[in-house]
Structures are given as C-alpha cells and as structure tokens.
Image (tube, rainbow, N blue to C red; front, side, top):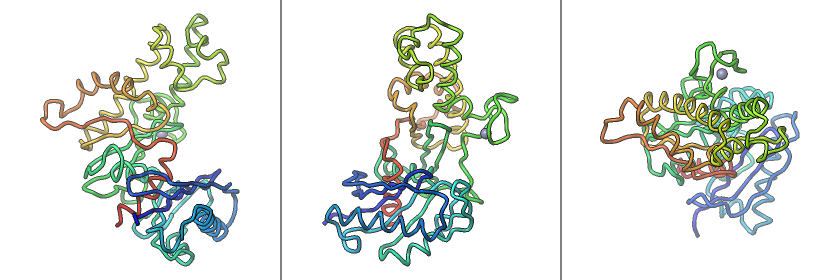
Length: 320
Ligand SMILES: [Zn+2]
C-alpha cells in the first residue's frame, strides 16, 4: 500500500486535518473549531481526537496506514526539536508539542511554522519539486514567506526568519503593524490592493470597478484586476502601481537568495499567468542576475486552499 501522511493545519479558528498521499493529493479531510483559549493539553487531545476520527470515518488505521503526522502552526517554531517557542494567538510559550503528542501518537510527529509548511509542500510535491533552493511568497491578508536553502527549511537563528512582508520598500511610507513604515506587505498584500482599489473607486465614480462590484464593502483583490482587463483607466493605475511595488519586493528577495524557483501563493496569485506577465518586464529589468544563464523562475504555487494541510503532511515526506 502507498504511504499516506496526516497533515494538521492548526489555526486560531479551526483545526483542519487531512490524509494526503506522497503526491500531495488530499484523500479526505475534516475540521473542528479550535475554541481558544484553552490549555495546551486540551488542544493536544483535540488534535489527536480529530486525526483518530478522520482515519476511522474513512476506513484507515492510524497506527498502520499513516506514516507520520505533521502539524503547521503560527508562531516561532523550532522544527528540529518540535518546540513552539511562542504563539501569540494561542497564548503559548515553550510548548513542547512534539514530545507531548508523541505520547498520544504511535507514528512520528513533526511540527513547523505554517509559512514553512508552504515551501515544504511546493518543494516536495508542487511547482518547486526537487529544488534545493526555493522561496514561497504568499500574497494574502499579509505577505508571508518561506525558504528552502541548500535542501533545508531556513528558519533563522531565532526561528523568526523570512518575515518577507516586513522588508521596507518605501522609506517613511505606509505605517505597518510591526512598527516600521513602508513595509512590503503594506503595498503588496491582497488587503493593500483591495484598499487601493477602494480609494480609487471613491475618487472615480465612473470607474468600471463600480460595475464589477457595486458594493464597495465587497471589493477584493480581484476587483481591480477585472476592471484592468476591461480597460478601466483608474484600475489600470491601481494595478500598475501594485505590480511595481510587488516587483520591487520580489526582486529584493531574488537578489538576496537567487533561488531556482520563487512560488507566489495567496489570493492575488489567483490571477496566475496574467500576474506573472505583468511582473516579468520589471523583474527582467531589475534582477541583478538578469544576464546570467540560470535565472530565478517565478511561478504560481501549486497548492491553493488546502496548502496548510498538504504542507503539514509533506513534513513527513521531507523527513522520510
Ligand atoms: Zn512591517
């Protein structure tokens, strides 16, 4: 029988678990409410119960059919020792999750920061498969990042590395939650594009963005792109500005890491080839290695909605 892996995406609202094959296909999944705040031992029991019932309901034996359990969690995580040093959302510090869960599960348990699980998924079974050096940048509510360097997850000395959303791309620019001004994510996150689209709509009552989305509260990252494709002038300015900022941050990262592949994930990456085509002229003009024989390939991440579950499960493949 093929090897199967359990992946758990531990979020502040839901705990989602899935059984995943070595190619990154989800065979079945289930989720429960996280119901925070609660003590660590209660959450550990909930994770085990969720995995156990998922297996039982789908005809799998947790002890025989599953090779490992991987968990992706927010916070600063020492993946090698399986310790969450700090998870502000959960209120946990020094959570020895691997040791504790290993008393419940008979199979190996792995844990990583959830941005790092995204890069593991892409490198093990996604659009950076087989790469020794690759980056993932997710364009969602914020801008997140994960790196695989020399065949290993790069977490930084204190496990807080690759906070790519908080590199400054505009000095004295927009105020960021982290305390700096002009951070990459204040310009390149899906939420930044949404905000810019709303500002442009309010200043341009005739913009096609109003036809595409009459309720300004429902504007999202897609609205400006759709209006741009329809030839709307205001949306064209919004998207062109967005692309310039996004390209600036991405070229900064390329110039530091020169990865083989850079995968774009998150809501904005739903624009797929259209997004890549808009980025290309800026990256081609600014990449320090633009004349090199081997250049960084920018691609769209393979794993989308269930990337958290798949990436967590792939921790087992990475450690196999
Ligand atoms: Zn910041």
